Length: 265
Image (cartoon, rainbow, N blue to C red; front, side):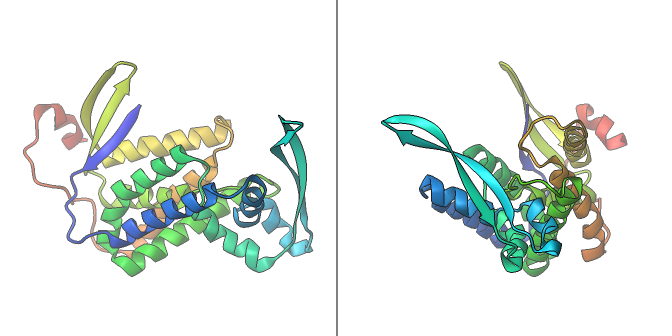
């Protein structure tokens, strides 16, 4: 397992928008978690991104699905099938692209996304400034959802999470700070160590893993194509939104022998 915990790119300002995004995601998750099962599922299916709802807007058709829920019957837990009809409400469907970015499927999903947002988002905010940064973040999330829709426009599986928008930040980071050192914990069973990886290698490896997972459809329940689309969007949008020279930013430090390979590469 690889766990990035620090980079060496200095910042000139406090990433207040990144902190605000993290706070919004955490608060929304806590509010959502305290809902009763049926209101929670109703909110999920109406405000998460669902490709089939977008596909049906042109025909003005409602999407009908059956949601399995756990309930008590004679004091024993049973699974009941709850039918839901999702109307072709254009404002609700379009807004779901944005509301889904603040919804997460569990603590692991939330914490993983928020850590990557904290680690990589702050430098992109520092580079772009608050206004361009929030525009970039939301646009990246929208394009990530669009790629997921193209992959399976009839899917009735709700997509939640900030992963697509954060993937766009990773793409932006990879093209802006390719030689930044990512201090990474490597953990294999009981063995662990810390190594420095260039961002282009760490994030490039992350992208390749997402792409292979999307093509092979391993790990059900993960919107792999949204990750791929978000990363590609970040690569494409960052040079357009910030045309300044890039690629040389890194904290000064003498190169150690073990890092000579990365300096040459």
